[in-house]
Image (cartoon, rainbow, N blue to C red; front, side):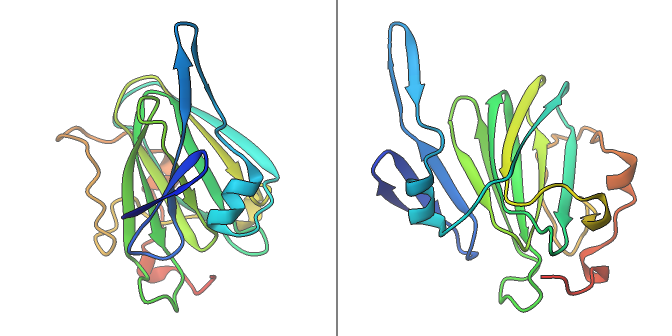
Length: 191
């Protein structure tokens, strides 16, 4: 990752074109802190024009919960700006753009209330995370409304993607939907 600064936010890129790691500045004193966690002009300077239409909030009560790898097909393909406000997760974005030279590759980063980082996952990527702590609050802004008809998932344990989920030998807690998800090789060209 190569860091650069955009006024009030550090922005880092990856070897895979598209995802961005953003770290807003926090200013604090004896009372606590203040942080601009999102500013459209700064975000668009890094990611390009984006319109967010929905905010989502999930809670996971225990360590080892895996949610993903999720996507929505066009015209409801979602870009996501994700962050953690309690606890910590290992967050993953997988390139699902068939014509991309990095198709099937992924980036993974720890997002936590302590490191204050956010991950931008553009449309065309699968997204998932694994909780690293108990009692995790996970928030994300999306660029398209949720559509059950356009919702899909790829198996979190697909060997072709080979995400090294930090489970420390524990059995992951996964939804039935995610446990039955297809493999990346079976995903039709959608992005």
